[in-house]
Structure formats: structure tokens, C-alpha cells
Image 1: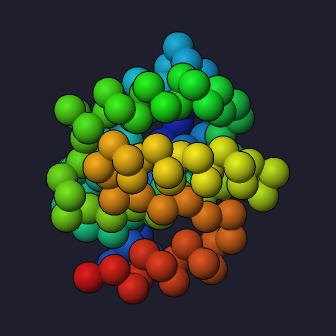
Image 2 (image 1 turned 45 degrees about the vertical axis):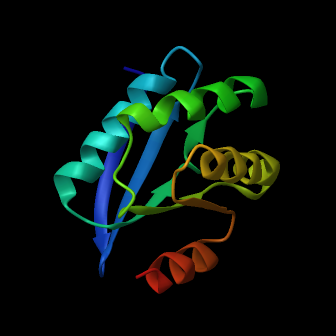
Image 3 (image 1 turned 135 degrees about the vertical axis):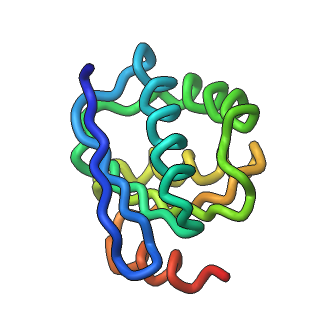
Length: 123
């Protein structure tokens, strides 16, 4: 396995940190493990920290991947803030847009304090 998922709790927020390597070959495995982790936790507010994860899906692959995801996705009551590195701001902005268009409640951030402030402000 080329990735690892770690969790911690920050108040009412589940922090899911994904480490290792991401590629089109393991993207579905990462998403499945992430969804399983979130559902088992019972938390409604999630901060997905992908800063330690190396590799990103190309825009075209991400677009189609996010459209396939809702069939196996999280319930709408779960909100997610995705935290990425500043050099990946364009990626995380596109992730937010394509996720929203696919019906997922997700926002992208490159600053931890902004991500936590937003996720904590959600009902």
C-alpha cells in the first residue's frame, strides 16, 4: 500500500491526515478508506489534511473521478474541509468546484486556520 491514513480529534472535528503517494491507480482505494474512516468515526465535521500526500490527480482525471464518487460517497450531513499545500492551491480550488458540482459538501484550503475556522462554523 502506498498511502496511510491517520486520524485525530480536534474538538468536534475529525482530522484525517493522508500520507504517502497518490496516483490514478490508487485514488479509489484512498477515497474508499477515507470514506470508511469518516463513517466509522460518526463525526459530521472533517478536516482532510492532504499536505503530506505526494502526487495529485490530473484535472481531467479528477473531474471524472469526482463524478463517480457520489455513488459511494458520504452523506450530505458530513462537511469536509480539504487542506493542501500552497503550491497546490489551483488543484484544491478545482477539487472544491468539481466536488460541489458533483453534490458533495467540500471546501478547499491552503491555510490550516482558515480550514478549521470554516469547518467549525458549519452547523
